[in-house]
Image (cartoon, rainbow, N blue to C red):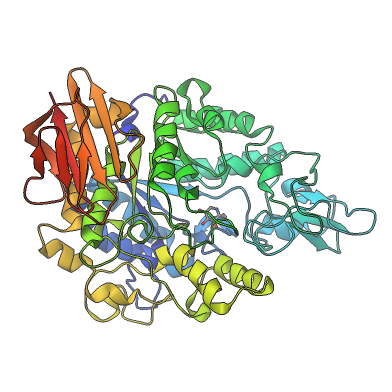
Length: 565
Ligand code: NOJ
């Protein structure tokens, strides 16, 4: 089937499952495939169309499954291949599609390819990874430092007398995409899963697969310190050639959805990944709006975001991709802290209001919305206050790094509290019962203690819950074409508290208004915009907002969507 025959993915809403934290069915404290099977009806009730499953392949779990040691096998703690096939067919029977993570920027060092590759320079797998000779003084080939903050990107292997490249953990050597045999192995594996019936892939770190082959030092690095490897690996010289080949050889033969994770990718470059005429991927998953609260040490900071930055980032992508490419719309992710804690407000009186407001701002934009497990009940950051509670290797690397820089324990933990990836990885809060209904055992990572208040069973029992608000947003997407292909226009770029925009399509025009303030504020609609008062599409307060002429008195975190005359 032709890859763009239906574009069904433009109308879809994706739900992301982090398997180890979703639902444990066998009492070992780790979520698993049979746990997901139990909860498929819940996802159906929410109304989503596609499940994106984080990696479930065989793995030593150094990076929670992003270090794959066998791309054809299921990690035992998640279940068996038979469980996987049962899950896939049960999902399909419910009308849900399922996409998998394709993790081929690096593999695990325990993958058989690497075990062979490291033995010598002339075996069939020698060139499956990126090997370089030491500099004359024996040191690493260049100054790139690992993205996970654990020192050099290079590790020396005496058997070969060479260094291998790892952008992430030492145990995750980068695959050599310049080797056509490696590429064929990747394509073979993709066909294996596609032929089993999966509905597409989220391509992990795909903007990093092609490196500058001169492997130059990063000139921006401070003398004696490591430089960012993004400089030599982001959107490298052959990345689009590789994706076009992948499309030709594999993707174009299936009617599937593909989304490319593209970190550090400017908008003009992003278009290249997803412009249909280029035959690469369907959509891009970019991080621009996740950078608005970066600080002195990058992502690990306690800075508050500015609404003006968030708006300008989102508007930039809405505008630049319009009619050219396709965006992924997301707040939460397994690599990001919880959005209510980050851009909303966790205080009990504001948590649900701000969760709904944020959902509104996002879901009415153009692109495919992604909901990360727990977002639909307004889960918040776990904020562990003891380093022992953290499970993510990046959190531990950062802890060591900050301690090395002389930061106090308190300051270090504050940064982790705000930004650690573990904030998103605490178990799904199914109920207020012991262990939140996630497991019968000790969970692999501590639960967020607020599970007694915030959980699925209380959300399902409350018709005003965040869950039902998401359900309604998803339902509206099925009904309102303007949400899919309407044009996007900002109403108030200068406003410091309100994010407001219009979507427009053949006589249909809707207006989104969202307050990011915890106070009551006034918002004046431009004269040329007249709302149809009786036709509110959705809002997060029960009663109507007060209005005087064109002036609206917005309550804390109020979100409103109206038809315009
Ligand atoms: C991006 C994934 O989302 C993240 O969780 C992982 O650590 C890195 N890629 C490395 O694979």
